[in-house]
Length: 260
Figure (cartoon, rainbow, N blue to C red):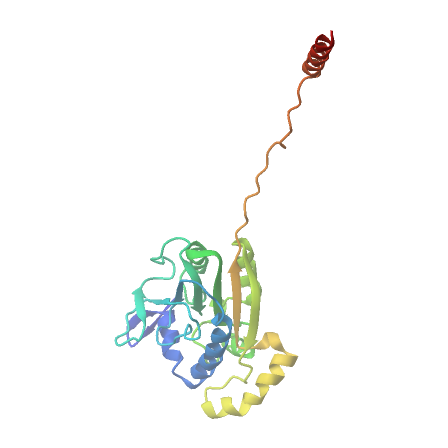
């Protein structure tokens, strides 16, 4: 999942970060920034992490005090704490993270299943993960599958993780998806001018063809089944019938002895 540019091999997530400075990239980033802000604003806890894209702060609307961005390359002059790490091997304790955001992290990873397993490991019970990704069944995704046309996004269509596929992965790990949304309905274009001209399609697409958005955003909660104690029911021990009869006889004998 690496591409060559200027003779240098670099991970796909870094290609995506460069793409976000293009007109279509800025268009997608603006939408994702608004969606991330809305989904993380009311999440509370002690620790929150963002995986990848350190130039974009998708946790800025969240009030969790300790926030870290895990990245493959350190960025000079960053305004927040960075941790050099791969998403398949996060350097965090088990069940130590309350909130995790993953912008396009699954489709850019060499092993997306391992990334989800790491997310499941580091999240506390009832912790939340928010994930964004490209929709392979959108008009943008269809352009990438047509021969002779230059893809509009840096992630090839076969590597993009569809929403139904992600839902199946969530079920295997006992994640419960509670919110999701598609966005970016403008026609495929490399021009900022034409992207703005197609902006009227945002409301129309959200209403009439919501599953055709170029990108999607989902929020899921880690559910942990609580153990149920199973054992024999407690029973009150009763005195044997013979002992009760003996006690009753003794009391009657004592009473009769007192009368004589």
